[in-house]
Length: 281
Ligand code: NAD
Image (cartoon, rainbow, N blue to C red; front, side, top):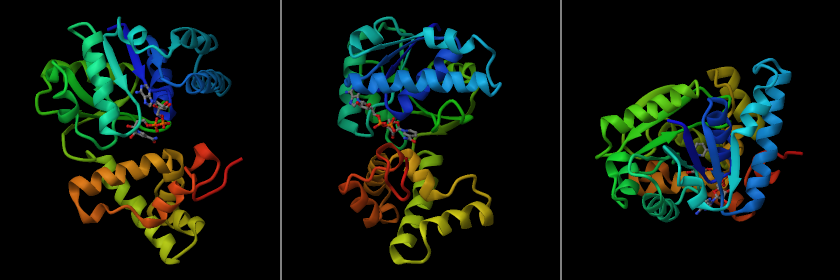
């Protein structure tokens, strides 16, 4: 496997492109929005440089990795030569299905199509293509270059060969893998969304301040980040889409907190918009 295409250059897509390039793959990063691509390029180059300065990478690895990434708004250009495509567009089934149908038409027969969905069904996405056996979910974590895990989720028709290719790609990116059979929210999002939603409900009910809820979870329960800080990092719009999907598929327990809905309506999307449960410079 040599060529990886990443579709969607937002928070996750840029991180997956970074880790893929560092692993030695040739990477095409595609987004429909050229501003997103410019931001992604700036982010990747800054983070690579920081990693050299902090001693995580050898001098020169930053430039070599950056040179392995090309940026394009054309999905045809990005995917035509790809051995593996990792989709990281918005968490909306209609958009993911549209992207997968296009990829199915563009890509070579051997190409594996992976989705980075946090919650949704790779079976449903793969069923819209002529190659459900080559479709799978590779769920990376944010920030991708620092987080160790990839949850690999098999759809109903995913072949063993496709699973092996996805695992090999993740391990080449120096990630640990867990294998999950498809169920909404997999292991991590199902658990994490519930914790985050409960924290938001507590904040709405006036149980404690955002700072104290997060501090309690970090110092009392040994979580590395508080659930509200983490939701801000994920993006509150993305978190709301995750909750809505889990609510539809798993029921009442996952009803999105009204405070989360209100924040998204107000344009408070967390770190990416400069304002969420906390304010950011
Ligand atoms: P984001 O909003 O930061 O980025 C999404 C990008 O997709 C945008 O740049 C947008 O322009 C682009 N896009 C939209 N439609 C497109 C299309 N048709 N073709 C190409 N690009 C398109 O979102 P994100 O946080 O990077 O999330 C992306 C996916 O990753 C979602 O499925 C999300 O659930 C999942 N995910 C997110 C996190 C997180 O912490 N943010 C963690 C794990 C998984």
